[in-house]
Image (spheres, rainbow, N blue to C red):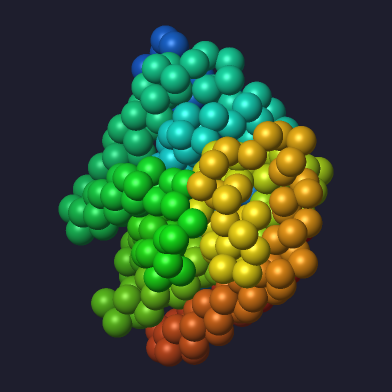
Length: 322
């Protein structure tokens, strides 16, 4: 797992912190009772890497990691991430996530949309307990970016002419900003100065972009066992990802498959064409470029922060298979 080596480097306190996160997420999801609390709880029960809460912890100096506000910020970030996953499943018509049925598949469009909205609201409710208005403003800007990114994904759907730059702009809004927010909140609430908060936000944004590109490569060349969902989900949904867009430049059949939904039986043969073009290796190199940018930002952090665990996270993100 991505977080394993980083957690080892961070020491025993990380286990206590992550246990507190799970407790806080359970309470936040169940807060109101009713339908959306049930479906929000089901989303939580599906599990996850909890990478974003870990980034909050790792971005704070060791001396400040016991602060209650860090737990609040980490829980808020994960609640917002959970909300985006529920909304993504509606847009993608995804029946499985992490090997479990999605809220969309069990309860339909309207309940899934309401569940995502509920989780967004709980994210702000939990973070508001810190009383830190700049932190809340940071999360609000992140939420606005997520909304714009979702809209861009819809507009770019089934558009093989989408440029890599447009794709990366979308990924920055949908993924990069949430990673950046996790790191910036950890740094801010952990007491680092503004310059270091900014560098850690840059680190998080570049890490998020590397993570997303690598995830999109896995959707074309991974396995259901490694991703927790059927491969080719992006192709079936018409999501214009970087490996698909690169392959479409070289192969007319891939270009056509992005524009027009392929039959399920045709997905694996089309993904084989994607692999043959060299698009997976080219996209992976883009992810590695963002890894290098993330590491450069870490090297500029001047405060009292052990950056080794964060380096471990970013080094493993492109080579993951889970």
